[in-house]
Length: 305
Ligand code: NAD
Ligand code: KPL
Image (cartoon, rainbow, N blue to C red; front, side, top):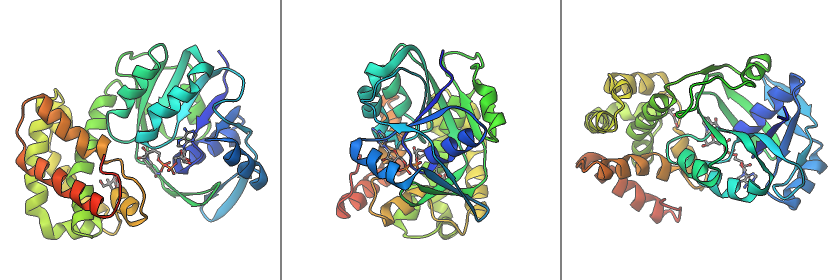
């Protein structure tokens, strides 16, 4: 199996991973959206990573999904709603034994990708690292964090896992990746939509703790019904801890809405509401929040799914 890391999506997280792997001497290739993006990338001469005010340029080779050559190891670093369509385009190049590492937040996109590529091994990631794009091909490493990776269908550690430590990417293999993803989804559901609706930073929710608490009670019920008791444990306390620890920050959904970007609502609150419905669970506060958020996004001309 080729040891090249193909990285689909040279946005914030994709660039952060690509630059660290390239810096460690790993073989890395970017897969960009189309020829126009490829020309623009080549004109820029590579990806620039800014870390502790130091900028470094990495001239990582790049191609497009339609280029030649098999893909054995693929890091999918686009948004959740782009992941499955991106895999469909790449299918002719995906090796039968390919490993696909998914960086998407939320839940649902991992299953969509697995349906598109049933022969590949799909590995999900839950990341608390933070990066943002200052400009095209220029990314700032904004928040140190951690990555948990795991395959819900196969506990065996992949042979490339050591590459991450060698590249300085903090990561741990976990057999409980679904617990991690559900817990993060629940925290995101309790915080992010309310920051959009109340037009506030995370700390602004300290003035709406009754609403946060009501959501946590329902999210706890949902997690338990979905067979995720560990993700449900002391959720309310954890959400309040996150609100305090990130009080000065604006949630990722707030930032997307403010910038007029599509949100990942379908894979966060939308996923939670669909799961509740599937289990015949009536969760009025969560459903009301979803309706309010959908109306808010529509009023701004943004996709609501
Ligand atoms: P981003 O928008 O910065 O980057 C996504 C990139 O994917 C864009 O450059 C886009 O052009 C590209 N893309 C989309 N479709 C493509 C295709 N078919 N082929 C090639 N490229 C394609 O997004 P991001 O902030 O890096 O987020 C990626 C995922 O990681 C999201 O699910 C997000 O929630 C999650 N995440 C991000 C951060 C962060 O700090 N940025 C932290 C934790 C989790
Ligand atoms: O993950 C987050 C986000 O903004 O997406 C936090 C800060 C934890 C709030 O849910």
